Amino acid sequence: MILGLDAGGTATRWALANNKLQVVAEGADAGLTALLLNDTFGQSKLTGVLTSIKQAVDLKLAQLKNSNDPTTASLTQLNAGFTGIDGHSEPLATLISTVFELPVSAVRTCSDVELAYRSIFVPSQGYVVYSGTGSIASYIDENNLHHRAGGRGVYLDDGGGGYWIAREALRAIWRQEDIVPGFWKQSVLANAVFDYIGTNEWSGTRQFFYSQERGTVGMLAKVVADCANQDPVALKIMEQAGHELARLAKALICRFGPKPVALLGRAARLHPAIQQHFEEQILLTGSVEILSEKQLQIALPAHHAATLLTSKSKA
Image 1 (cartoon, rainbow, N blue to C red):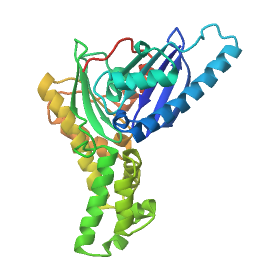
Image 2: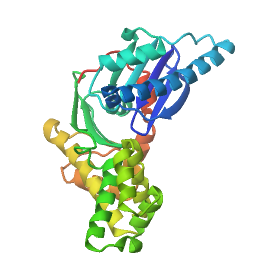
Image 3: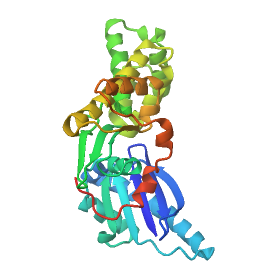
């Protein structure tokens, strides 16, 4: 059996495939990032979530074996796409192999955006712009080399991602409060954001923004999007998000020439203005096809695509 993982800031999705590469089970757990490897607390969280996934997978394997399914056996390969890495990570593979009781040689890791790319395109055939908690554009060339634009992390950039949207909303709210204290009472956006946070005090915003994990902050983006049809500030942020994501695609177009572009990720679907302004900017570059929703719907989910990986990724 092969296990595929797609680990992002808000969720880690897994798929279990048999020796015919047919997905027989799938599920989800808490979000993860390879950056958690950097300290003891993070490593503990990584281990905890991976252990939880292992327990779910072991339960499913036991059920399949009890049903006398001849295609099932023990887990022999694990392929994982993680945010926070560009290619194969031996430290991450080692930790995963320990949790899942596999040889480290049986674990393959790559970036989550590479999984997203392979779920849509074969190498050299297009560009993927991915907007989740963060944002990045990806291109895998004919030599299987992975090229990217953006993806520098939410503290440095990741324009157009969920965290960026949340940060821009909080910035706009508190800048307006600097000018007109109490203006938030008249703002649809500020009221919705403060309802979500649970307080209209700066101390509460500070506590939320600086103490929560990036995925939790990024989920505030949905609140911003829900306000966009009633609040001009929220709508402007949606439009700017589209521009930011288009910038990533245009960077790769400048480097490698015109190719079809796919816009993926939950943050990219938060509001129609994001897609609209993304497309407007891409079309300015010339004859570049933007994959439609119908074309994207037939793509493999990224955690399914992970089960198909057979070798270490090149970055």
